[in-house]
Length: 488
Image 1 (tube, helix red, strand yellow):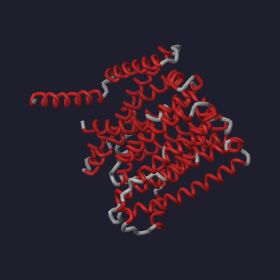
Image 2 (tube, rainbow, N blue to C red; image 1 turned 45 degrees about the horizontal axis):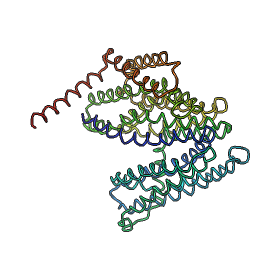
Image 3 (cartoon, rainbow, N blue to C red; image 1 turned 120 degrees about the vertical axis):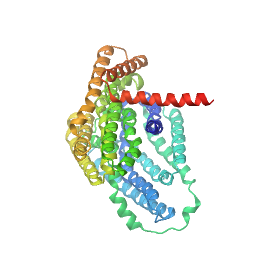
């Protein structure tokens, strides 16, 4: 019951972050059209890649120091990290300027839309002013959460007012930058005055520690953004593909959040069992986590693939039906990222195998960039998707090998087989039943309902252990309700 509660709390927060941006997404695709939306996705994605690499890593670095560094005062940690963030911002801006100049010599995309790239610099400024890492590191996450929610609401209102034609894609990029700046300035004025006392400068030491922690930002988001930038370099005429790619990533993110949150929510329980040195319980917990991820990830993966084309045609607009094909190709990532969260985020990390995780992530970055570089000229943005799939599959295979003491490959196959068989039957049934149906909301609702019923019946018939666990959870809740009713 506690694990279910933790999962629900975590998933509600993460889903809010993933679902709310879909509201302006649907509006923007209808208003901007595929080419203008693709241009804005390229400009924003290029800058967000730098923000993630330079500022995202320093944010995580600051959070960890504030949580786990009792030898230094909050003020010392805060101001040393701020200096590092300023330096990182300057380096990112110089790198961006040099890169744009270099591409502008031969790449028509960078030549024609130089003003759009300049507008995207506001995103870098806004990210540099982000102080949410301080509040999260000091265990005060409510303020950054309220700031993020209010900023999204403000952004949505301004988009409805200022973005009304395909020619307003510059306004869209400027709005993202300015709302990011204004929202983060709100947190700046919430910083406590005590941060101006007891400051000790150790810039060199902190800088060295930060550089060692760059691995923390390596992962799916960085790999996906690098694929977008590579497409702009190797295939600059793929403007429409950039829009399809960005929209597909945002929509697929909802399913990814649902799955990877399982690994995050079960981490405290895993840590407790690991500290007890109970090997049998450890194996049981890993099996349960892998099975839970598979049980949730399989229907989301097959459901996304089966419903994507018709859903995107009515949700994003007639010109965006191709987003469904991109989502179908991205769908296996839902399950792969869930498995990788269990292996890397739980067992290997707490088992002292951080070097293995770091190695697989750096290797993953190299493989992702290399494959995307080779495939994008021939397959367009689908080449970036193939690179993502191969990278995540490689990471899963290597981490599974190092976790073989508690996760036998044969047992993983046995755990997954029931759900994969049921999910594939669900997928085929939805396709055959609704293949010629018109792209209406009612079609999507029917597909989701049909898929849910078929999947639930399938795992019951195959006697999934999760069905028994669900029954026990329901009985436990019923007992609690009956006790409360009797006492009243």
